[in-house]
Length: 316
Ligand SMILES: [Zn+2]
Image (cartoon, rainbow, N blue to C red; front, side):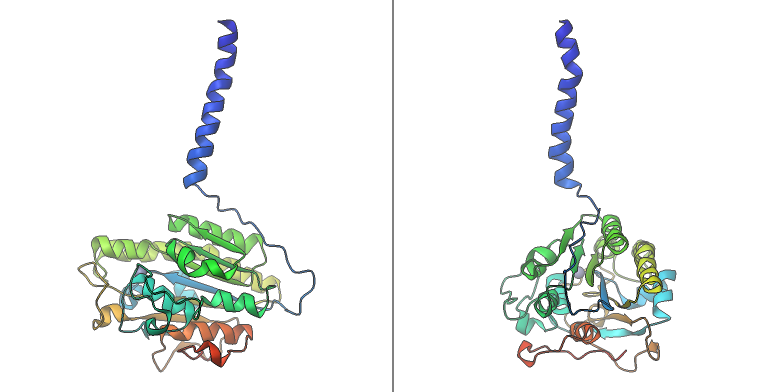
C-alpha cells in the first residue's frame, strides 16, 4: 500500500506526460524559430530581402475604412493601389493564392478552386522554388494560417521554414520570432481571420466584425513590421514589403464564383522598399501576377523567359 502511494504521483505524472506529448504536440506547434544554418560561403550579399504578407479576403474599401495605424505607416512609404486586379476568373482562395505565388493566371497554374485539381506547379512553381533555384543560400520561409498554401503550393520548394498554424495570433508570433532570431531572406506569411469574419458576418465596410478583424490583423503586423524596421536600422538590409490579398467578397459572405463582381475581383496591393522612390498611389491598377516579378526584381534574380510569367514588376 505504502509502495502504491509512493508510485501514484509518478504514475499520474507519467500519464500526464504521455497525454501532453500526444495532445499538445499534435495541436500546439511551437512558434519558436528554428533558424536555418547560413551558407559557409556565398556570393549573396543578403542586403535585398522580401516579406510578402497576405491578408485573406480583405476588401480594399474595408481596409481603407478600418483603423490600421501600422498599415498606414507602411503605406506612407509605399507605392500602392486600391484597385489591384486579382483577375476575373476563379475567385476562390486556392486559385487566388496560386496566382499570387506563382505569378501566372489559373489558365497556366491550373488551380480554379480550393480543391487544387489540375494543379500545374511543376511548370509554374511557387516563387520560393525559383528563389531557391537561384541560390540555396537564400533562406526562405512560408508561415501560414491556410495550411493548403504550404501543403499544396510551397512544399516542393525546399523552404527553410514551412509552418502552418490554426490561429493568426500564432502566425504573428512565429513570423516575429523568425525575424528577430534568424537571418531569413524571403518570407511569405498569410493571415486568415479576416476571411473567416467575412464568411460568417459579411465582407463589407459596414460590417463591424469584418472591420474588427482587419484592425486585429493590423495589430498583428505591428511587431512584424517593427522587427523589419529594426533590422534595416541596425543591419545593411533593404526589405521589400508587399501586402495584398487573394480576393474580396460580398456583404452576403461569399466570394467564390463571383467572377464579374468587382467587390470580389478588385483588391489592393502595397509595395514598399527601404527607399521607395515617389511613394504614393500608383496611376494604374497592377495585377496579382505582378507581385512575383516585383520580388525577383528586388532580389536581383533575372526573370527567365521560359518561366512564362504573366506579370511585370511594379517600379519602386
Ligand atoms: Zn481566400
